[in-house]
Length: 631
Image (cartoon, rainbow, N blue to C red; front, top):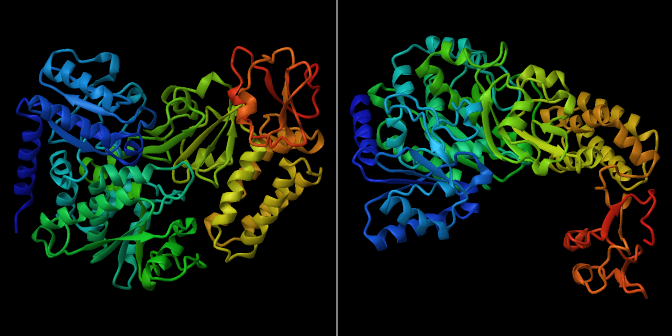
């Protein structure tokens, strides 16, 4: 059995052979989002361009840095130059980069996002190199994402990977538990319970065998944090699981993910196999007599299976129903045995805590929420993608300094945090610190880390309807209040957005919300009304406009808007709107300007989109407002 020092030395040699012999290195992000943007074509273009010119250069496919709006991202390292990151790279740009930078000394800065600094040494856990918005971030969880090849275990080990496991194998279970407790780590799956206390309770449970399970069933709309970690740095998750299994004496673990994540599944399985080959997983880990097998289990995509007890039933081959608690899973979970179940991010933090020390992790964040927060920033914001900031960072800093503000310079209206069951917070909460307790007090939640920004063009009533429709469809149906209560709430919201709302509907929505929260077993039902409750609390005027005035202030709800063509602006020879109208509702007035037949119009908005900007003849209005002259 090889010792860890030999494994580490082999990894360092492999890493130095990549970076240390003066040959240019081209890193291309190749996670799912990168691939959707055309990254694989870029990789192939680099291979062809380098081959045709007989150049010496290495191409490394990495995970995602998380800057979704800049993908595909390419990072080029060349001797005597800083690492340079190029954004939105297309195959057509590859020739310019190869001939300009690799063959000559022109770094093609007109194509660059920026130079990268702060790379760190190979013997320490590195910080992700600086990018334009990185001055506001602190990347612990995402430190390797977009920098290493996730399918090469040597890259992970060379940058400090599995050193925490090696250290933990010489510690007692009690010492490891104490380190995790002192770090202040709270579960990143949404509940925010102390990870150390949870581990300690499972350790003290008398029954055996015990199990470790990773909840990678990420089903929130707009969320992709766990997927990026699994695709970009899978060994971090494995290492955290192995350390926890060492504490509990587990011999079997599971990673529960969804079939919609094929690349994550592939890279996880590759990581497991590589760790086994080096003796870091499997039988007799590093000669200590401790053995652990980890299996990847693919779920069918049911949102409810993100709930811990439903997830465990699913692995057992049963229907994914949540169960009554107590007992908790740490006492009676998978196969009625003590089970340590944590989120992807929770496990991935563990190696940092063990290697760097609990005091280091506890020094980051706020008083009661330690470490960093990772969010998938989406919606009406300039810079969409992953954000990792110290706990306690304000919403304003994330949205406006890191996210670049609201897209198109429009007015910020609100932000929905914590997945489909999170609350919608208005501008007055922009100074709210991002941590478990502050968000809960505001009526929202940390959740698993989704953050959707909304602007003046978002209707908050329709937003609440959208998220409630999602949770209704994803409810397992076990609890009557969740199954029927959310359906009744959705019916009321659909009436309101259709202009059929009644004054008593608002109070009825609040009452139903309280009943659903009280009558539901799991977190899905207990949090499903949050979008409705917070939009009523903070945007009540929009509900009243829909109900009392029969208008949608944001001009979103189809039954409460109309499209008109302003005669004075309509260019007589233009046929753009006529061509794209699916309902054939646009005709011609005897004076040759276009008119919309409101009986036929399906409110698709195509006419508004194609009307030439120099005319802007098509307008969208509330039907209760005065129509344009001649409209």
